[in-house]
Image 1 (tube, helix red, strand yellow):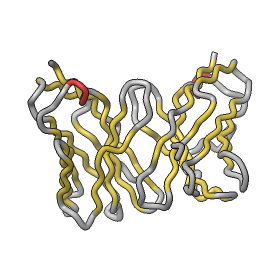
Image 2 (cartoon, chains in turn yellow, cyan):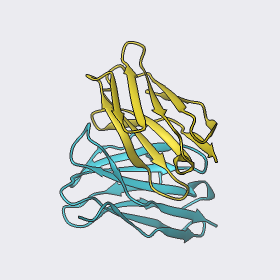
Image 3 (cartoon, chains in turn yellow, blue):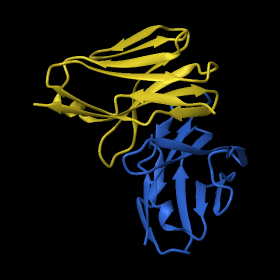
Length: 110
Length: 113
């Protein structure tokens, strides 16, 4: 079945450094790729998304890149801050079907 | 404009009891999704509904679990004869259409004793 692999599962960075999370997907029909941030005990919240007709999208310190040929996409967070510490989920969607990665626990050390 | 609402936020049940989880989508949204999240794990798709219709329930166990989204009122995820393995956070999300952002509710944390 469809699958989304996410790496790394845990990432620890120093405040101010960059963080990169990578995902690969199996369903070539996927055309919408959201990223969610989930703080402990809270709901997942969308932080950025990209559609298959776009290769890169940026929103302040957050950027996402998509390589449809290779079926992988990445989240880049620059100038990390302690409040960026959370679990980040990538997802690949086609129609209503959204498959989530297993998540990356990001620790930003002050 | 209220976001996605879920209740209860916490639910404790003994083995064999029924759990009933409710989800009210955002105003104007007619697409509802239910996900299960085990501790330290990702979100697993369970079921996708539109008003009065189950569109896809491929992620939902065939026994003991059912979902509905009636013409009036919230969507309900029902778990009969709960077992300890049902303990998890259950999130509902809604969207205005497919291929659109899904907005998540705060979740219901089910604990089965």
